[in-house]
Length: 198
Image 1 (cartoon, rainbow, N blue to C red):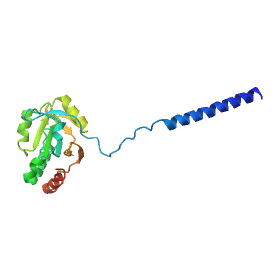
Image 2: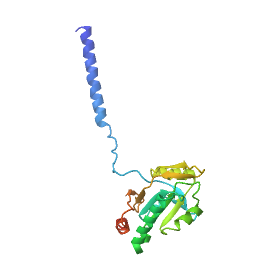
Image 3: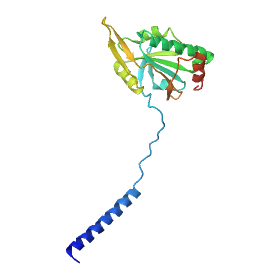
Image 4: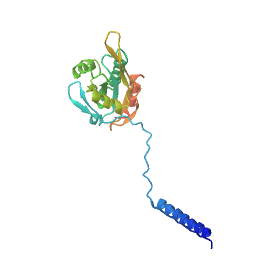
């Protein structure tokens, strides 16, 4: 047997051995864990804010009742008061069941929306609507958790307004995001849907 033939035979034996080893290791290795895909958007998470009465409110407050959450600010000229009025109408349509649900109005304007300002503002709406605000850092945290956009927009007179996401979030009584909630339909119809999550 020539030297070249010996080298080819040795290389072939080595390659076959390597192939067997790789196959054995692959078969013996545990399969990677399967990721469970629920198809649910990752909306919601931990937060710590202050309500209009000065009490700390965290994500634990979402447990036990379905919750509507709307992000806005008290100097909002039309979108925010309209959304809170619509939610108030839904709670009115719930009648004696109104206490089985709740709503949070979360300020995206921590510079102006103190608990005292929020208390005055939300007093015009349903008592089921709680005003929440926090430090700029706490506000950014909850905005991140709920995928909320907001931006300060300077006005000509030196004042400012806020551009922001205008969606009503529906959370079930476990604190899990269900879907955007249509509060613009007839209040009785919206109340009937909310009752499904009691």
